Image 1 (cartoon, each protein chain N blue to C red):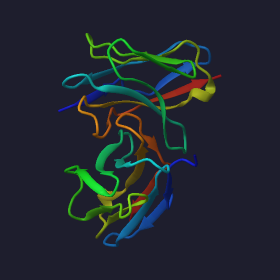
Image 2 (cartoon, rainbow over the protein chains, first blue to last red):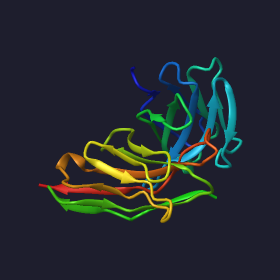
Image 3 (cartoon, chains in turn yellow, brown):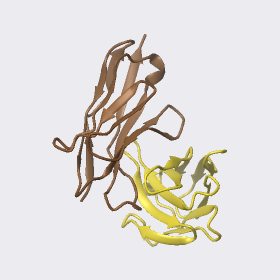
Length: 112
Length: 113
């Protein structure tokens, strides 16, 4: 069990650029979640996959955000035309059941 | 909607002091309740959980009891160590399951020797 991994760990970009983050869940976990965490706040849900199907999206996920999990394994989160308000820690979690979620180390995005 | 309210920090304690971090929730039905911990520079780690009323979750000397009558899930530890310094998050998954965690804002704990 290697845990949930995320890449990159840090990303600095200029406003207006596109960025893509990757999450590799624990193998055999069919549920995968994306959250966003800003300074001094708890994580907020963005979207959720069961296998390759995207089952739920938060209203936080504007049209500039898109997520995929094409083969039910790794997932990508893309942000187009980044804004300074997108600066945050992006967390991925995977789960083998309906209760317990295991988190990766996160990708810290800074938009200049 | 479902929500979690935690006591605001930061909390500063001396080593070996007793710790309580209060957490109350608002949810329909019977949610599952969790405490996650985030050590400096690391990701969130599950500390303990309870899935039904009166259950007690415990791990690494930490305990929390699911109290339906007071809608609470307070975190306690009898004797904290410097290594317990971290941010602690209370969270729930609604009764319907298969849905994301709803987190509180977190409580930062600093333990001084």
